[in-house]
Length: 48
Picture 1 (cartoon, rainbow, N blue to C red):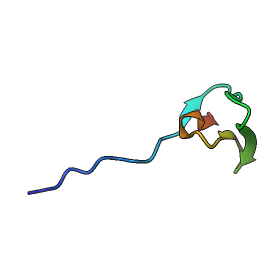
Picture 2: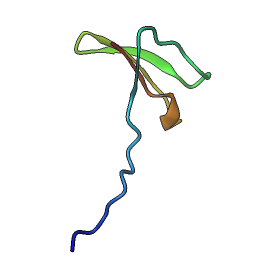
Picture 3: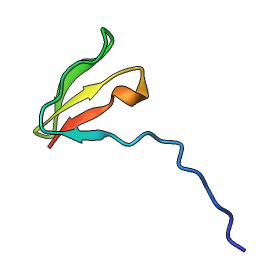
């Protein structure tokens, strides 16, 4: 029998335009993509 595992990582939101949601959010550029990283994992975004 296979055990069901729950995904604990928060996938990144992919949006046409990204912006800061809170004061802790940082807009960065990695590998030619604009991203928002934050302590709050719900705020992770990638432009695409």
